[in-house]
Image (cartoon, rainbow, N blue to C red):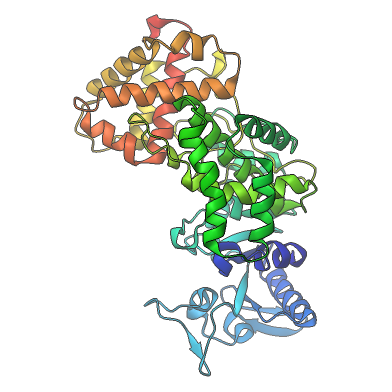
Length: 455
């Protein structure tokens, strides 16, 4: 655990140097033993931070009675505050005239704090406990707390599980997710393909990537670094004469590369130096890639949400994406990897079922009646199927990744064209990323049904 946490979280300055980790143990006795072992090892290694432990009541271990307050040296109702470094009023906690700030970077738990614990600084989780059902969902979701001030993104999150299998986690999440499947384990060689595709566009010269990395890791002035990035950004918007679709494709692939490589680097040391160099170059380039297209609504939200779509279990593969069975709720786990997203015939639900399940999650209290909602589904799905690009770029397109991009683009155009008539619906679509993903998935299920008669 420490072999990962120290170099990959602490030294890597995740979340602007504020990242925390949680160790989930089987029971209180094991939590106490982990607490003592981890702090002993940290002291031996000379690190200035320590671990806290959290459990209820008291526990006898090796003939000694322990409590949370006794081990931590603070009142147990302040454990979460000391772990954060700030009190309930948001003021820094000061002890002996010194701010504790990053004094406590790890929290050892058994059951306490596995649910209802909201700590945005959590970045890594180490699991040595059987997780089942809603407990698994709630425990892993401790990481899924946004922290925009800390620039928290998916690649900052890491889970190392010593106890559960992919099937264990799949079984736990199935009742809470609707997505029919996520991609299989991603071969890290997909980075070769993404890099080759990005190189071919001509937005950047490799000499610029090399120059940027040399200057960046030499702590050169930010203005000089920005000048290098600006060359590529200007080439993207004007000199390259890229069509809008090509610009969108480049930006999405760049984000995919950064996200996939960032996740891979959390699991193992990078072995291809060019990947590392391109990663840092793209991290600074992507925010400057501006796409002048009025039909683009919240493009930058694509691939940005922090989620648990990748669950790290294997070293030879980049995490392991877990297939989730369809259920009555509606939630599409976002995944940065190209993937198929079309149901098999056996997974296709009736229109009524699609509408009902979607309404249960999203349209509670909405002004439209159930029949009006059904009509909106039907009309928008029909508009997508009538789109001039539907047959060529979606229906007859063998590339699942490009099919998904084409569908998203057609949906955006249809929704934009209906903006005035469906303002309430359009606002949900444009401003809520989760709603948009679920809406898109439901409509895609509808247009892929065997016969138009079902509409």
